[in-house]
Length: 173
Image (tube, rainbow, N blue to C red):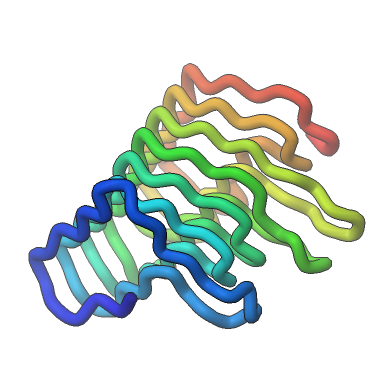
């Protein structure tokens, strides 16, 4: 599904957006559009569940992500105000690489009240939540992350608050 306009609500009402695990496809692709809400979608079997680039005010709420090969949600540094709340992330990184469930390089973003349960395959390093280099002013709060290599990482991100998260069964730290 490629977003082609501003000011949209994509409400799947529990329906499935299913890929083919081909290694290069996206469940929802948002590029240069603003004010997009994605809610109650079940997104599975893509390289990336949601890919966000050069976009602002993006909200993903009450979604379920299953079995992406790279990332469940990726937002680049040209994006701003990406909010991920009340969602479930199960498994990622089923191809031998370093993968993340949630990877945001966007400023002014929030990751709140999500459940992240990764599966680690041989040769794969999975990080549950990442605020990538360049991200500023973020909040990571009340998330439950388990069975990842690393639960939460902030590689070069600044000005963030991380609190009230539960991390367990991590194999790398």
